[in-house]
Image (tube, rainbow, N blue to C red; front, side):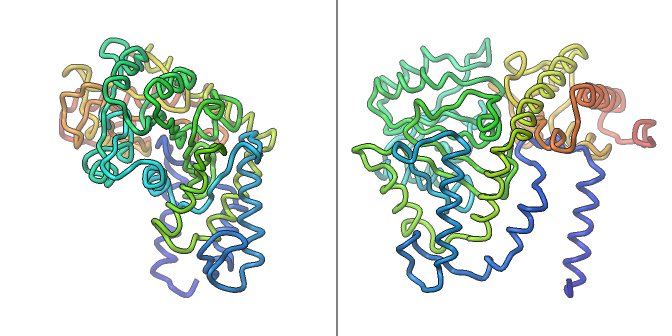
Length: 406
């Protein structure tokens, strides 16, 4: 690379990634094939429109790439092209979610979505997001005692508010979701059921988490988390008399964006093919095994797990524990100094600020890609425990500890 400044920074980031233990739940590591597609000559091509209906010439190869990506997306999740369509042009997860609302929900309509502090996403109708400015969020949360979904309460709320769309799927909820109950709730108030499976898509593809496709009208997902692909998104929509796929396609283009990033679409196609392999299924199951082993070790060590455990790749730890522990920001900072990367995170009914909440969120997908097994994650949990307990002894002043010196 002739640009030495950027080359130096890229090399620095490569070095950083190699030397840390990455427990960010929304990150992973892609294959060299995915990187090759992302950095290919496809970056040069503008492809506004859809296959067979582009607004520029020279798209015969691009059409093949986009169609192949669509085919692989359906095959990865065992879907029939007669029952499901998929849009592969959304640039990332947030625009994908906005496109669904734009296509299906009238301006000013309502979204029944989980509140951010209980594990939902900004694009599920939060007030600071465009989704909470154009549409109205009807927030729901978890049960105060179990910290899990209470479907009876959710049903009562839906029947009372009659939302236009119900969003299931979250960013910080570690438990399995009962998709069938969500379908029943949506039918009871004649709402669309949208599933945002961004965090669990790879687990669904690998058979390590229940699939939502038998029950949802629309399924959105990012590609870069457990699915182990580039930063991109997919929007699956059920084919029936409501013409949902056509509405969503128009919402993506021309409603929200111009030409798709074809290099990104090609890289997504590569990742989807990888997700169909036997090794990926083993990987997905190992991700869940690793999270379970780590969660059990944290519990043994005395830390409180939100909802009592995990059924996925994600662990939400209450490390403040009503003043007996440490704040999320301090914990995140301390761990990063020791080469362990997590993110601070609110917990349900958190009394602390989102800037310095009571919890941290941990994910096992990235380090499982690097080959770690249950025993490795048990050891990482013990290391985290030592760092945090040392922090409790030291207070707010960071010192060079024996752990740090190692």
